[in-house]
Image 1: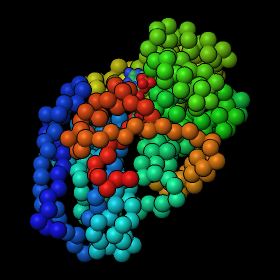
Image 2 (image 1 turned 90 degrees about the vertical axis):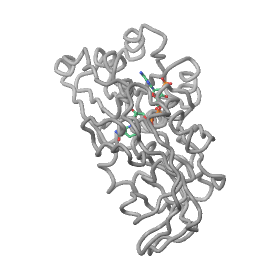
Image 3 (image 1 turned 60 degrees about the horizontal axis):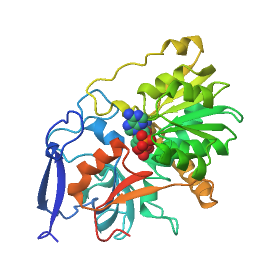
Image 4 (image 1 turned 180 degrees about the vertical axis):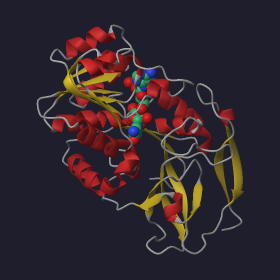
Length: 343
Ligand SMILES: NC(=O)c1ccc[n+]([C@@H]2O[C@H](COP(=O)([O-])OP(=O)(O)OC[C@H]3O[C@@H](n4cnc5c(N)ncnc54)[C@H](OP(=O)(O)O)[C@@H]3O)[C@@H](O)[C@H]2O)c1
């Protein structure tokens, strides 16, 4: 095994604007062998997440920024190919912070990976997507714990055709809410209403955003699940109900910008006695099993619909995949297949 090599993408520069291929360095190194307490994981699928772009900056954030010269941080799902660690056998599936690399070797807790209890018929990508940290779990805890929607209330969610947003809206429907999505373009809006079952969807690229949100939410907005910030957040702030809850899950409209402009309509938080709360999924680790079981139940009985785009092209495709994610050039959850062994 030690004669074999593996490849990794190191962060070479902090990007300005859209990431460039030259912000990364592709290097090969000998494939290590696990020591006592360690596992060797082959990365099968890399999850592309907007937060990859945050981790590349050195702005204050919820995890330490990736250092220049370090393997780019990323979530993946893989298979154990060698193990000297109790509780991990060759062939086990694992998910977590495998990184932008073809293999990872180390103690599972230091790598940040966990063994996946596979459910028959469930594809591996679901364990970071619809049932996993970057998709379903974020939607579940962000909406239910922070947004606290009640039956009959109006819930608005942005990036509604995406990984998190598509699930937020469906979970809100399960809880008896009226749900309005915000997405870019007629095709994505049709998907949100016709396939996901939202009550309406506003196309933020069409113009007249404030009027369109007002028309879709004549009684005001009780819960806003914000994935984007920017102009959509401002249009929502202008249309809040009394005691509205605003879940700040993401601000993707500003991730390629060096500074983030504040909301123009912030005074409406005061006028409508609203609550604005930031949310990070990693704070909910102790309750992942609860969300995983509930999401799997809803998914298996057909209450959650989910789309994904899986790209091929190997590790060198990762920067391009991230560019496409931030431009919205994909359907549903985006991932990159890294191995011919991937199902
Ligand atoms: N807080 C947490 O713990 C946590 C965890 C996971 C994700 N998140 C956040 O959740 C958000 C969604 O993540 P995701 O993985 O589900 O991605 P996603 O929605 O699958 O993909 C990103 C989407 O963002 C939309 N977008 C990009 N630029 C935009 C802009 N300027 N204005 C409006 N929409 C824009 C695009 O949708 P359209 O094609 O419709 O334009 C794109 O498809 C991100 O902000 C992410 O950082 C937070």
